[in-house]
Image (cartoon, rainbow over all chains, first blue to last red; front, side):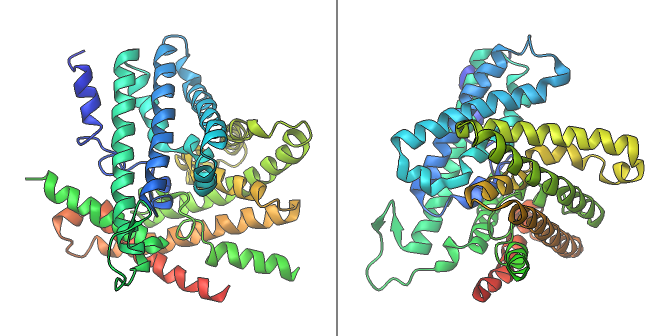
Amino acid sequence: MAKTLTQEFVKGLWDEIPPFRLVLGLCPTLAVTKTVENGIGMGLATTFVLVFSNILVSALRKIIPSKVRIACFIIVIATFVTVVELLMQAFTYPLFLKLGIFIPLIVVNCIVLGRAEAFASKNSVLASTADGLGIGVGFTLALGALGGVREILGNGTFLGKTVFGPAFQPFTFMVEAPGAFVCLGLMLCLMNLVGKK
Amino acid sequence: MGDYILLAISCILVNNILLAQYLGNCPFLGTSKKMETAVGMAMAVVFVLVLAGVITWLLETYVLKAFGLEYLRTIAFILVIASLVQFVEMFLKKSVPALYTGLGIFLPLITTNCAVMGVCLINVNEEYTFMQSLVTSFSYAVGFGLALILFAGVRERIILGRVPRPLQDTAIGLVTAGVLSLAFFAFKGMA
């Protein structure tokens, strides 16, 4: 192991931040970022699944036969998604209703399966935990940022509080489907602009 | 009959799975760089989505609901979809090799296509009847194919243009998808 745990964690925050650097998991990114609250809620739910599925996959990596590994990963992930689903239903019901079918759809979020396959199945439990946490926090930050831009421009609010004066005309385009695509595209462009020399 | 046609139109155009419901966007951006791959993906999705829609509906009604096991829905559905994809792949390889080579690598990718899982969940959440689920599954898949092929056509032209460096590839793809989505957005006025 050449890399330390901190490095594994930090790389998820910038170098490999999904959905910008790894163009994976776009569906929840576009769908739930109408407001900051939804974005962060979705990000945290995904982080939970990501960390625990990474831990379990990495712990079982020597037992799982490589031929059926994808099926095993999917079962592990589906189990944790069900856990999140039930927990959210119990404790954060309004958010659960807002996120709707996107909670069960974490199962088919390519980020989670991608990390299980590309990282957790080859590395130790500790490194996989750090990796899952890093990617998860990165994803949450990205969703929060995208949700922030869309909520401020589209609704004139931030976390439900009004930002601009009463004269502000909401830019409704931003909270609708087309705005989601354009906004993500422009943010990706910005990332490329900053990231490249 | 009229109801079914209305349902089909609303699924294909008004609530287009890619551009209005945001499902299945990874293959939308991933396989739309070339027309051939887009057509292959679209066909594979139509094929699998109709089968998956029917089977998950039967599973939900006759197994999960009958025994009060709704909390196992996520696990049950993903297992059905994953094994279905595997099965379809083996079946095609043996019986219709021409189609198999055509769909090729797109079949395994469909397991993690959220459009498939998404439509199955929508069918169940909306409590559609069997015929309605069949119609929605088919029309959502057609809508997916339509949007994907249109988008691939646009993207093939963009490659010829001069795109600023930071916007290249995925970024311009997303902006284009936004414009396409705006076109489909107009159908919302019809509903």
